[in-house]
Length: 472
Image 1: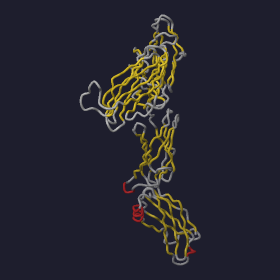
Image 2 (image 1 turned 90 degrees about the vertical axis):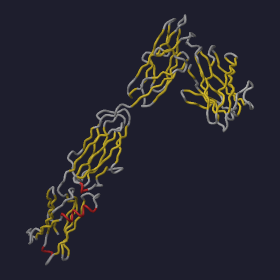
Image 3 (image 1 turned 45 degrees about the horizontal axis):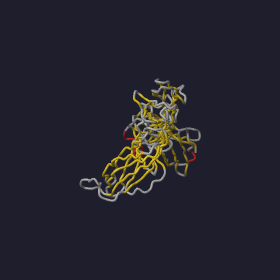
């Protein structure tokens, strides 16, 4: 026999140390005055699951509980109590419900106990102490088992179902459906018209199944109940057949997340760029999914250190999230490549904890100049250069000065070995990358106005770059 409680209503007088709860599907709900049993089928074996909890600081001894039914027929059914219940503990019992006659169910349930648990044997007079009685109301109804009065039976997977029995669908992948077959048998001598309905998200009646099922005498008829999960979760519903209710339970899980393919909007990598990592999963996914994306950088040689300018364009510099909206197939993350040669690696963590990686290699490049200016001042000429060297290994600079006619001024090209100076500069702040600003001062003997311009050439292991002639 299966315990059934459909609702708990109204207000309950103070029960001192005793708290009464009804239990349905393993969940205890405190009674607040009335246990509403609902409508049950005639002759179905129905029990109400109860918990008697001790909320006080001393034990209580429950001697008996008595159901006094006034309808559908006057009867009093008493049951031996569970005995001693320690503080903070509970005892579980079942209360049978009379279902032999069609009609209203009404009555009261009285629970008698004394405070304190005897240490010795209990005599015929019961435990010592003043009895305390707590009372709750019982209500419900008994309906004919078949819609037309015939006592039909309901079965699933070859098992006859009692009121409140559970029908459990196999666990499904979200997006799939499952069908269970229910059989209604009419053992009577006349045809039965059996009302059928389903409620609950994801549950429904099979194709062609109406609100009533006609079953001939001595015959059986079957119908389908379907389950199409609405979410990757546990879902419940109710199947009603001939006045009886049965619990429907289904659950679903997400399909495996598609394997992503990562690529870059600019396939040719270089320092000083803004680029975009594109992530394509090839097919739409049923739900929105947010994934973690991490960026790491490995310089081409260990002495270069990190480059903090290599980062995502928004949010955390090296940690990002990418979201695939439900039905979407692509996501992306924008980033900048900094000013240091090396390899940028992206690691995408999938919902199952596995990872996918994609790398972008930034090759060594000749020095990139952003600005190049020269200023003639009394007794000197100042040349200012700014830009970046992603090799961190600038080695040589050559300056050539020109007169107003464009001719080199003796002694011609002035060469400087700058490898040590640049090496110390980049080592002093490795996180800054390859960015530099240089100021070269040349003293002038004679008249500065005879010097009309200057040209600078900078070299590193990747090549040489020469400025245009900087005019004064």
